[in-house]
Image 1: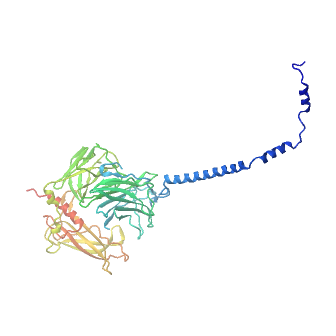
Image 2 (image 1 turned 90 degrees about the horizontal axis):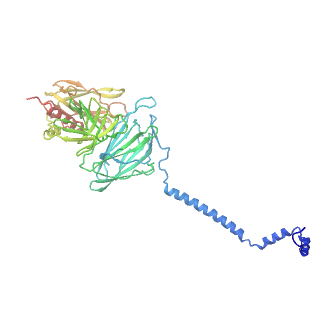
Length: 107
Length: 416
């Protein structure tokens, strides 16, 4: 019971398929393909990697320099304090506010 | 470089012992290269005597138009400091700006510069104690030649003073006004946003909680005591109740209107022209003794005799101490005495031939020998109860003495 007519030629082809192939054919084809390729992609890989490292280094250095430029180093270290004999500990005011007290400005 | 430095008041007690702590104050008047004088005051909420190393730098100095402010440790090293510049930017205008002292720690950020006029005063907090909020501040008043500068009265007991809120009621209850001695007293009670006290032959002092024409923020109310400036003089009023209801120290406005007419003749220092003819009306004899509070410190006990024929109402003398070996001056002492009982407001003059002894012995400057060095005593000013005087009266305390006694005499003339 068949829905289509048999094709003798196709049957002959199917009898021959798959063709016999040596076991190392796949490896040989792969090696041949690799030999056929230029080494340039590997060089590009290293080139991109090196460029990435350089850009990151430049960025970090620039960041540090900008940070130092916009944030002045503290001139009075936190440990700066006057300890009196009576135990009181005074530290300098960070940014004093100058008031003209003779005009009645609140201290 | 000419500047005067004086430690006005320094007292402290140990927090660890639970004793009260008191503010301390220092003051100086350095002169700048541009000719202006700066009245500097440093005030710290917690005082304390600090022994400084002999070769320690000054805590106030001058460099050109800048005052150099150093905070110095006991070992003489500078732990913090700043320079405050007073650069003239107009005929009577100064720009106040700050810079670090090379090699000395400075504020994290410098205070913003301000322009002020001749005679104005600036203030800023310099130190703070994070655990308690207590502070130390500096004030500077800049004055061109001819402008009268003063020191601001600062708290003796309270914390940082505030400026009295405008409209606050002030109260004067039985006030006694003094300038070294009580000059006037009033029996009334007054309460308003501005109150005043009049001193005959001197002037009227008006105090206000709001600024106004002629008023200066140069009065400090602290409990029952009010200290203030009037002209170039410092005054004090003691009252029976606090001047303001709010606790603490408050700066308020004061205006001084000198009396017309009699005031100038009453307080003109005549001593500089007083006759020195004739022998000194006082004979002063010194005998060795020890200091009142420390028997190990040598001192001089002074006996004073009126060898004149008139009643003496006040006198002043000064002592010059010298190194007996080298003859080099070692320091000066002196005192002024007024024989007026300020409680009863009655004179108790020294009669001819009367002898008295100074209650406090004169303590000479410290010296390596541990004994009293050479000394010479001279009478500087004698004021008789008829208003006449004897002596050069060149000592600063003599000028004040003469002003006070002449004012008292002017206000206590016998009724005719």
